[in-house]
Structures are given as structure tokens and as C-alpha cells.
Length: 422
Ligand code: UD1
Image (cartoon, rainbow, N blue to C red):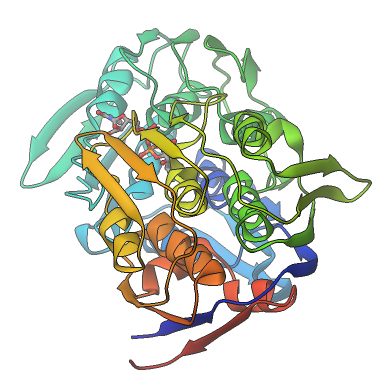
């Protein structure tokens, strides 16, 4: 199993290109199942989660060809011969549930394994299932699988989500494009990845209004056609790399960065004393001398502060002047990075969904364990600012969501290397 070794050093300087969004790509890929014609995605990220979704789609009979070193994914679902998403693939990645809505909408039946437990909380899929039921799906849960049928096809309906779910909004949105009549999604997620999905579906011939707001209206059509679509910039990768100079000083330009993708996050960085400037190529982040200021952070659905940047923000606040309070409102049990940061000298008290971080002058390098995707990168960020060497073990989580992290950070002057088999 690979480890990453980071040695804390001085200011970073240079540019980091930001990839296409993992979470957008993971919902755009299953959209291929809605049409018999090809769907091509450009600006795709090179990540193990994308390879897992590729395997899943291929297991159903879709053709997925990775081109230009993985940046282009050419897909065709002309011949879907298997309608069962197997546990062996689904258990690796929760986003696998996103094949359910499209398969059901196109062919009237699908069987998908339930994703099972996850390190950052229970994460059920009940909202996905209720949304499809509101469109006339008949569902049966047997032996860990959802058996879904819609013999006469899905029908438009009103889906009123009791709380915001990104994945359930995506599944329902895709399914509704081929349902008969009008579907209204209320309390829908407003994330940029939903907007990206709606834009792609519209290119495929879907009739959608209201994406990016809490109410999305979809007028079902008989069929969708092929399209080519660029994956939106990864706002979580963007925020993560914005934190690198924020943590250890310097000036780094994030190529492709857009402020509208990370508005709430930028407000907090600004309050902490970090400079952010829009440039012709993206966003430039600058940190001068002196400590950053403590800030309070509460995670919320978009446009609020993203839960997927909470761990990385905590790494910054570990060395801020004063006490910061971080509240995690999206997932239970998403502070597993806190004990690892404490191994590096951070002062953190966790009570339920709240973490109180008292800033210290400097963190100290230590061997630490990556517990999930965002936690792993938060430890790398902390290592950039720590005295001495930090060894981040179990980095396979990292490869699910960050392409070539050591190359990207190394290019701006970080001392970081990957070691195999530790
Ligand atoms: C997506 C993102 C993930 C991000 C999360 C929140 C992908 C592939 N992943 O995950 O990186 O952290 O949004 O921004 O896009 N819930 C239920 N029942 C459901 C569905 C969700 O109770 O049927 C709960 C979840 O346990 C969680 C909350 O709702 O507490 C929000 O989850 P959701 O927005 O659905 O997250 P994902 O789509 O899984």
C-alpha cells in the first residue's frame, strides 16, 4: 500500500491546473445509459473512482473508451444486456447507485446492490428510492439488492425531498428525462454538479428548467440522443489546492478556478486573512507572513460551505490564532481526521457534530493514517506546514479523488513523494 511523505517547508509558488470534477463525472457517466447514441465527456479527471464507474458501466454492456490519457471518455450504451449492478462493484463506490434511475427510465427494469456502510456515516439511499417511487417505480428490496420495475415506463410526478441530497436529485433528474409527463423536484440540490448534469442532459435533448435552484422541472421526452460535454471544474480539488499556499505561505494560481464554485469557502479564507484574486486564468491565492485568524465554519448544502472541504479547512485552522468552531451538518462521524491531526500536535475537541480547534504555533510531522478521501488530503496539507516529516499511510483513498497530487504540489515547490509498499 502506498504512502505519501511530506516534509514541511517554506512558501509555495507557481500554478496548479484544476481537473474536471470527480462528482460531476460520476453522474455524467451513468447518463450514457439514457441513450443508445454515444455520449462523450471531455475534461474528465484521471481517478480510481472514474475507473470504478467505467467498470460498472462496462459490466452492464456499455462501451467506455478512455482517450487522451483519460481526459476524454467516449461512451456508448447501444447494447445494455445486463441490468444488474453487482455488489462487488457497488460496495467500492456509493455513486454506483446512480445507474439505477437511468436504467429504469430507459428499459423499465434494473437491479442494483445497496451500497452498504461507509466510513463517514450510515449514508442510506432511501431518498433515491422514494423519488423513483414517486415516478411510478415498483421497488422490492431483497438480499441486499434493489429490484426496480416500471412496466409501462416511468411517469412524471412530484418529488418533494425532505432534505437536500445531491445523489438523489441526480438520480431523479436523470430518470425524469424519459418519464411520461412532467416531473417537479422540490427541495432539489443546487450544487454545480447538478447544473452540469442538467446542461449535459439538455444537450442530449432533455427538457429541463430550474437547475441551480431548489425547484427543477423536467418535461419527459421519448428518447435522448448523443452529445459531447466538458466536465465542470472540480470545486473541491480547487478549494483543496487553494489551502496549500494558505497553510504554508506563498502565492499559487489555480488554473481554471472560478469564484462562483467556491463562494462560501472564499468568504472564510478571506476572514482568516488569506488573499484571493481573480485572474485571467483562474484564481490566485496569497498568504503573507504572520498567523491566520480563527474562523467558525458550518457545512451546508451548496451554496453553503461544502462538507468535502471541512477536513482541509480544519488543517488550516489548526495553526490559526484563536479558537475556531467547525460544525458538520451533512454527515455524522466526519471528524476522523481530527485524532490524526492531534497526532501532529493540533488541539481539537470533538463533541458530536462540533469540533473546537484551538490554534497552535506550529504542527509537528508524524506518521498518520488516511481514513477517507478528504481526510487524507487534509493530512497532506497539514504536513506541508508541519515541522519535519509527515508520513500519510493508506493513501488509496486519496487516489479516488485527487489525480497526481504529488506532481501538482511538487510543481509549486512542496517537498512531497509517494513511496510504494509501506
Ligand atoms: C455527494 C458527493 C459527496 C458530498 C455529498 C454532500 C458524489 C459522488 N458525492 O454525495 O462527495 O460529500 O454529496 O455534498 O457526488 N441521505 C439520506 N438518504 C438518501 C441520500 C442521502 O439520508 O437517500 C443523507 C446522507 O446520509 C447525508 C445527506 O443525506 O447525510 C446528504 O447526502 P447526499 O447529498 O445524498 O450525498 P451524496 O450524493 O452521497
